[in-house]
Image 1 (cartoon, helix red, strand yellow):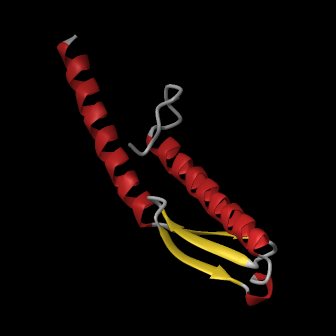
Image 2 (cartoon, helix red, strand yellow; image 1 turned 135 degrees about the vertical axis):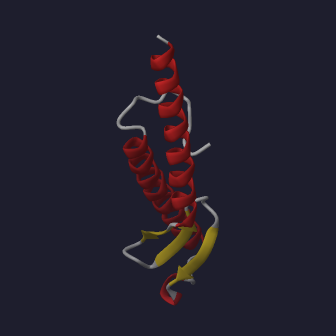
Length: 106
């Protein structure tokens, strides 16, 4: 019985270390979201920090459209980060279900 508990503790520690490595990898990625057929691009880091915004000069005459395109490009990049983060985390947790509402990385 004690051997099983020790083995489980070691396994939990390895998983925690792997989660931390995955979180560090996710923080280093950069993802670009686009909107309007590439007229607006937003580049975010894995921590969802904005690194770059590019706006095609042809859309600058319509302020409302530019605002909508920036929001859409940001959301596109954010969704890509979420998908990549989920893929990395599920690889680390070996498909172990994460409780609802628990966000990874922490």
